[in-house]
Length: 350
Image: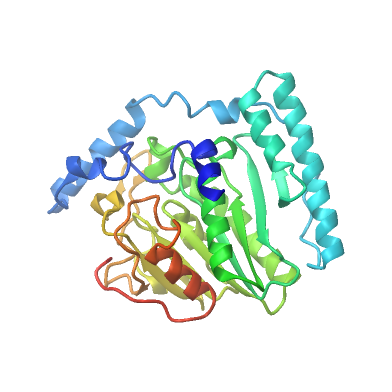
């Protein structure tokens, strides 16, 4: 059922610079650039493509009208009764957004929202505006002793939600009882082919909201083991939010960089992990930063490099969107980390 949902609703997979799908784009960047001049040239090409290539679908999700949701409030104590009330309030907000989408002729969004309003699904919050924000819970949060907060990368919104949802479901199934996974679509993710995808601006905007969410979650679930699970551009968001957060682990995977020089720069007591699959095209993105008059381009040190200082876990040989596929080494190892167990480790980004 998870795979069927993803095929129906996934849309464009999340990622970072380069419109190519897994297994394609790296051929144009077959060798890792050497020398600062070449790195700068490649970055210039990325920026030019990001600015010049039209993305016809990018404005569509944000253009769907949606009502203003009720004012957000801190998470309640995670008792069954309090969570039931929270889920019901979010369901009402989803139905309100569904009616407005349908009334304005946006039938695709309306169908997505009807699926989200299913009483079997549980949202801590929902906002249908500007591409959408949602915090969906998988598992019984009231009983959870281990909680993973999944932070997605670019090209993730309400109309392209299947990849995030499917990965969240599989991770929770792998974690089993006494666990919960929260799909945190809490920010306006950048389009893969855009200037925002190679700059930290969207991450800087998102970080305070992620920090606030995790702190509320820690208050609602005192004693639970909380981990941040951060894919692609989401790794930039997690690093920006990391300082002072009481989380056990920060897991970076499929990342082109974080804007931090090394793990120590995160100023976090959490264990920092990094993994990258061998066929992930993101490995060929230059790991440097270029300061231009209008923006800083690139994300710096490769998180799986020795100089970054993260603990490396084996992520298998999949592509950029394959980390949380069923039975993948990355899924197994991320689940072990969230559970407080030792994963299979690999060196050099394997």
